[in-house]
Amino acid sequence: MKNKIVVTHIKQPMVSVIIPVFNGAEYLKETVVSALNSAYPRFEILLIDDGSKDTSKIICKQLAKQYGKVRYYSFARNKGLGRVLNFAIKKARGEYICRINQDDRMYRFRLKTQVDFLKENRDVVAVGSYVKQFTPEGKTRIITYLEKDEDIKKLWHIVSPFADPSVMYKKSAVLKAGLYDQSFWPADDTQLWYRMGMVGKLANIPKPLVEVRWHDNAASVKYFKKLALSTLKMHLWADENIEKVSLTIKAYWLIQFVAGMLLSPQMNWYVYRILKRVLHVLYISQRFLEATMNKIKMLVRVIPQPRKFSFSGS
Image 1 (cartoon, rainbow, N blue to C red):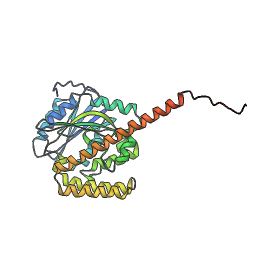
Image 2: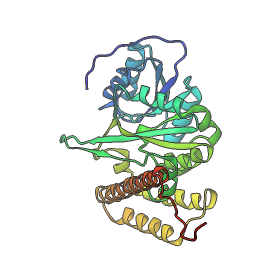
Image 3: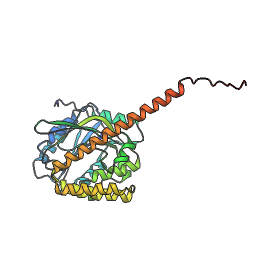
Image 4: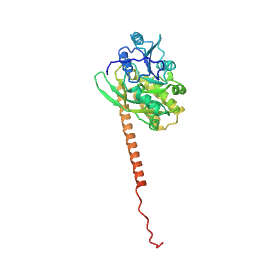
């Protein structure tokens, strides 16, 4: 991605890009540069260092000093991702909150694409996108997500609605939903999507807007066993507070938890992504069949029907 940065100073940003930082010195500048390079002008970047022990604080200070769009906050001790995000949301001046992680990158058109979508779809409170995953070895893959609210909510007990670093949501909606709950970390994002889904509609844009770095120090790998436990806790909470699920779904949750405890993070993510891909293909096929049947029904209505002739002489 190009590193040419055009910075304009604005009094009131429309979007607040939130980047929590914890020992993220290696890739942090690359992430911030990708956001600064956005084609959409009305945004700010909030860097919140959560007690880093590496040179992250120094990098954050340098970036805040160098670029007028960057604001920097720091905690002496680690408070946890959920608390950091809640702090940042309260400090944000934008109408929309844009999430990205300290080791990922966003495309230039991301902010404009999601802002336009939220303006055109007023009932949607959070919108994500497909993501392009990449590795240090240069391997890439596109990870897809269900696009429509009704489809997302049919399967949100099985697969997460979003890739967290792809999400943009309304600040008013996340405040109404109650912000992040640190007790569910590292599944606190998915637990929030449940509550956001009770406030309004969820959606995904069917193209990659972010590039997600896949490496052994990524939080989704490093803390996977904790994630498996928190995900089970979050699902049981959803069964009590969102909607009751079938015994089949509960069995799936238990299998998912056991696999998370026994198998490697890489194997778990590999199986999970296969499941997501299969479900996505099935839903696309279902949508295609429904659309085809609707077209056939419409054609049948407009085709002139043959007259009925009476042989009774009347």
